[in-house]
Image (cartoon, rainbow, N blue to C red; front, side):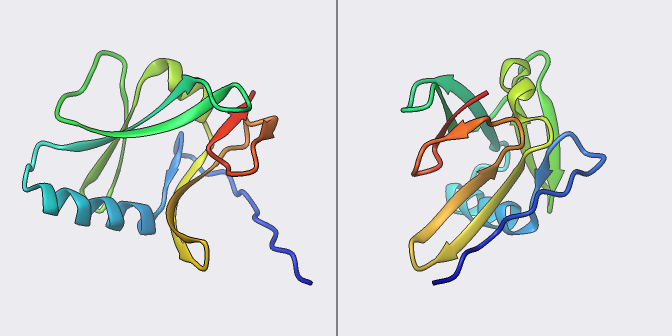
Length: 120
């Protein structure tokens, strides 16, 4: 039996948007054929741990949005969600469990088994 340990390394950026995640989003945006689209990540109430992560495409910046850019892809975060995502890493992985976006969040006190919800 083996275990995998994921180490979070903080950076000067408010949030780490990995190359793997940015390149995957870039491919998805190319399929949409809309150069104005950006990826928005947000936190909403729900899930088994209290908060859950969400992703959507958006064409417009909103007041107070934080923008993180990698490989020409803009990631948007609203002010309410930003407070829960400061220092987090947004990644994309492909493995035996399938392909998925993964958020490694140092602000999460507990997470659910599937990793899609958390409490802070």
